[in-house]
Image (cartoon, rainbow, N blue to C red; front, side):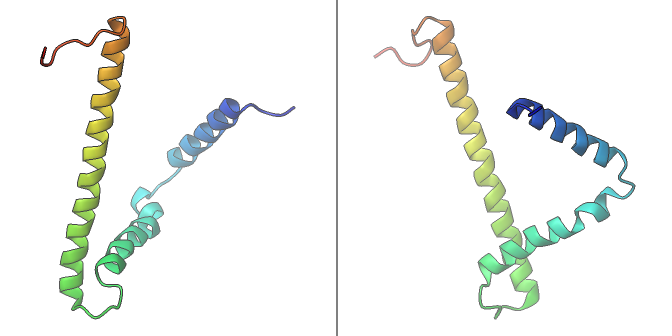
Length: 101
């Protein structure tokens, strides 16, 4: 019997939760992924590897912060749009608030 997409998703979520529940050292389990993420930013700011390691690390940290700030901005914009769409549907298609020009 084949599973539906939602059943496969639920099965995968259960497996992931079970796996994390049995993980003794969460930090060690994610160490390789964290290193790869940091390496990505270092490669981005110094593709030729010519910078001093301390300078490369500083620039990579700023690149990382910029990346997450962009994600936060996009998230806030998406929430604002979702809220506006929800408000519009709730009011039968009529806009509420804002300027009445």
